[in-house]
Length: 245
Image 1: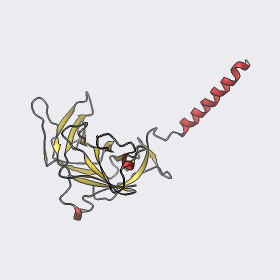
Image 2: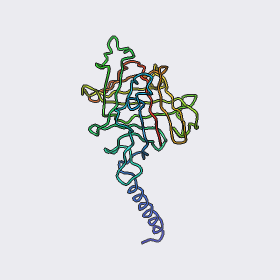
Image 3: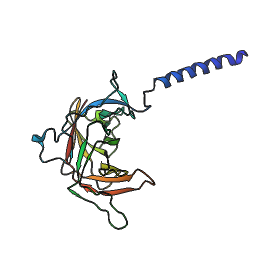
Image 4: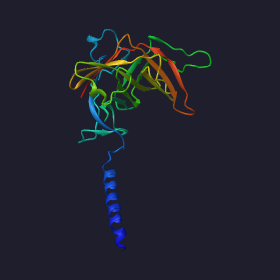
């Protein structure tokens, strides 16, 4: 071999071996690393403290703890086994439900109006929905005073202080249609809705809460054919989730 090419070839071989090693170490699923957290809905698990029945409720079966593969403290986003509450690598709260795994949440749309008039037709033919699917997983993004996402998510909120946050929660159509429904508290991306609040009450504890002053927007999007999104109205949907790391 020509000595001029020997060293570059060795470097390329080593680099290739390193890249192979990195590829082999990439988490199963190939996505964002997730860290399990406890997520507890205020209602109906603790009805005594509810000022009135919340419009987004848990199933009464206790904490939604993020699951991980056996023997692992973390998981990778996109795995079929993922379910429950997680922090992402950016310290955002992720909430995932999977069909058939025994957990659900409910939504009550009794307090609101739907602005679907003229050629735009609402798809919402329900005022109440229970869903055991929330895919893609819902995310909560704390924001600063200007509405920009906090760089380090929930960890950037000082203990004892609160921040506005935008949130999206997805659920399946209650009548089985090929429609994805999304509840959004996000005035930046969904004008007419508002932010909700995240309060950090301890080093490892946060409270996500919407009260009667906050407004959620509801959006539908068909999941087959040409995707058409419809503004399905604005609703008062008080709820509270306590997140413990």
